[in-house]
Image 1 (cartoon, rainbow, N blue to C red):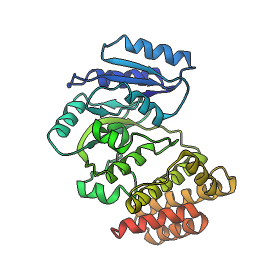
Image 2 (spheres, rainbow, N blue to C red):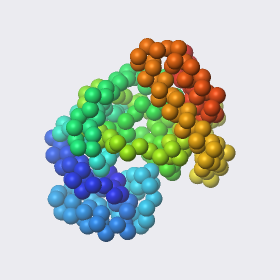
Image 3 (cartoon, rainbow, N blue to C red):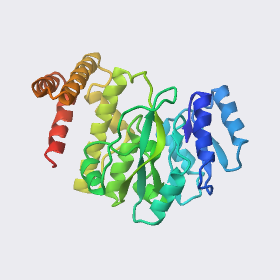
Length: 306
């Protein structure tokens, strides 16, 4: 689990949900990715005194989630690795059920269904879609359906795939696709095993556009691996790709924001069976934003099952 600047109450709920697992044989590695924040440093060392299974790993500087996870992994000794976010709450039997599934199957990674909660811990009505193994293999190359905070995976598979790579977002999606290329088996457990906290504050327009461009870059790398066996990833090539796509360009990001709003309205119209208005919205978004043109083409491809 990586911590940066979380609310202490929410952090303690997350920590206690791990310490109270019915499966008790684990090491709990907490990586502090904000070493200059004295408040957070004091909190994590105070947490370490709660249980001998807790290990604190202090980054020298803020490096982001991907590299923090890799840093924490250097101190892990187990054959199975579980992920946890610092503001979510695991069900008490999460580890027990996931370990049993991994130990009694050929799966290399499992993730679970979950329940949305708001900032106050109130359960939300949003439903989580359940995916079969065949769904996973078909859909995952097109969009990220694996819920990162619920993941548990075999150490050997994680190492075989090459750990996390340095992306500011969607680093988990890059890992899942590399695991697919390595022949790893990925499975969704349909039971709810985590309360996933969602917040009212929205991601900034710039970050939303960067997320979309990053996802497209990661899919491009996946296509390269499928074709050539290797990909052309480097952090410099990633930054150049973001520059080519206009990340940081106000005009392009405004076009994306406008298309994003139109798409959200089109989705609402689809739910209301206003198909003509929905189609009209998708066409407008297609025209306005190049980024959304790519997304709509992916949607069409997914619907056709290709």
